[in-house]
Length: 294
Image 1 (cartoon, rainbow, N blue to C red):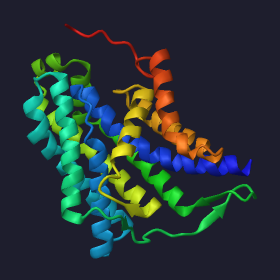
Image 2 (cartoon, rainbow, N blue to C red; image 1 turned 180 degrees about the vertical axis):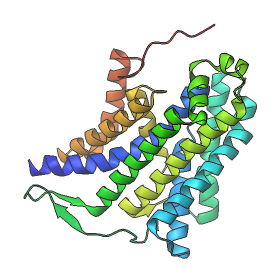
Image 3 (cartoon, rainbow, N blue to C red; image 1 turned 60 degrees about the vertical axis):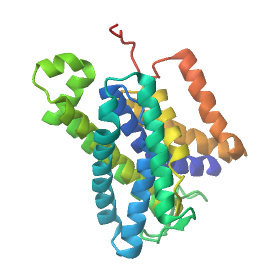
Image 4 (cartoon, rainbow, N blue to C red; image 1 turned 90 degrees about the horizontal axis):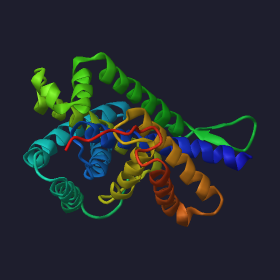
């Protein structure tokens, strides 16, 4: 019982990180139907920005988190303008290849500038632990920070999506792109806002994972990025609450599998779940069938 409680706690922390990254995937796909495979590497860049700010400038956790989000949002906009905007009216396979190319560029560009070695994050969060329900299971203060930051960012995202003009424009474009343009919505500006918000969330996830696991490297974004994509698809890509559910579900599932001695197979389990969901619910658990105009 204690082991199950402990793994649930770890799974919620891991799921929080997956959920933040998955939100960027699902937002971009909802607007322009693009699978942004470079999104996981923006998360990696966010981790390195946080590392630089906390290690060399001695900035605290929350200022480093906010600055990383701002810089990553700018990076996301630049990537959209330079790499994706020229491909907007091309075939989907061309856009997909471009996304993979941007991902590799970010990975090996970062490796060129900082080197391939693993870096260690400074201890910028308390290391104390709290026992749960009088058992041997403990919750680290870092887990609480991760969960609270994730919840706050998700609430802010919901506010932006449903209570601001920018959010209304995003929802309109996701619903009907052509009709939105006829109603006077600036398509380019809306897409840029989407990339900025999604990249900011990925940057926040990078700082959180750096402070939680204490190690980062230039290739750290590949697997979590892919896992977050799986989470978005499981929940229903293009549907924001579905991405959140998929992230937490995948995180808890992985830690549970590891707890029962299957740590070597947790990645395989994630893909197996994806296959099952696609067979049973091709549009994801919370996704809805949509007719595509041809």
